[in-house]
Image (cartoon, rainbow, N blue to C red; front, side, top):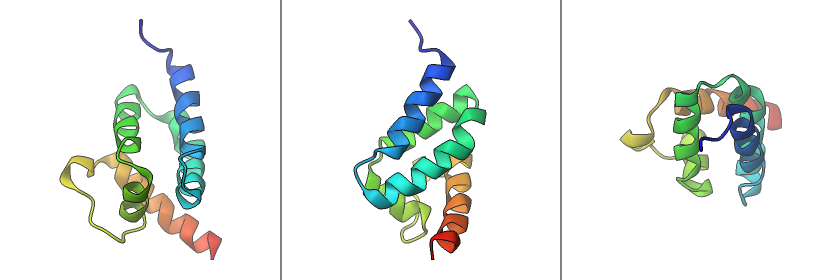
Length: 92
């Protein structure tokens, strides 16, 4: 049985808010609130795979402290990096 896309989006938004690392909670929570509702099934797959990479990795890639590995260089990651630039300016 496949998960309803509305439930999947809600689950991913919730998961993004409670990653275990405060900085990532704020970043991914805001990102998910803004974008996940409009993501296609394919983008949701990509985002869910990204979340499995682990909080510290996601954070350093999103804010540009480390290069993103090729397997995570996606349109969703580019969107997250752009979002993090805006969020970083707002949080200063």
